[in-house]
Image (cartoon, rainbow, N blue to C red; front, side, top):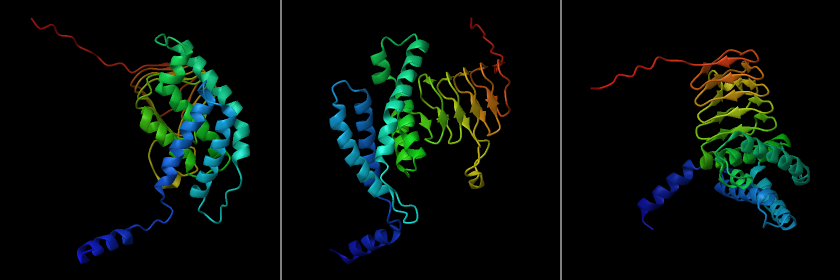
Length: 263
């Protein structure tokens, strides 16, 4: 090995200052996420067999993710396992919302296998329960894996109710402190975000609340922790909202479009 090569290696090693940054955790989280999806939905997958594999993989993830000695991780698998039937029940309701809402859907199987919006919701719900029981980092890695696959960014900290429908999925952003109630429909490009970004807002509700039976059409932007979209409201495409909307409202963003015929 040349002296120049040794110097380069030493410089790289000097800059690798985070001993807990193990990319194996990211890779194994993606494997765990896929196992979960197959266990809950694939007809040919043996549930009992996969549960055993999931448990072993979960323990491996916990060993990789729990490096803070003052916040020890306990055996959390049983708590999570007990939540899986409830998560699956919610996801089946989500799938029914898709089949009821989208005239392009030809079968319930198509929803489970071909709809990126459903996949994004599934991984959100699976990660959200892990976050609730105190598992560090892994929930965020799961939703970022889904984000990469679907174009839908749902923070695992968001609180989303039953029968949630996402159409087309691409470009949707749902922030950490968002609250979405039941029977809500969201279309592509929608942002439920904060008014601004500041580290001091950590642990503060900075994202909107969406009440029951709300529809939000493409590319609408709704911002702010105090912003509430009232029940049974419809938010039109491209709307920009930073204040609360009363229930039973219709919000539209209209612009003049001129059509000139070229002779």
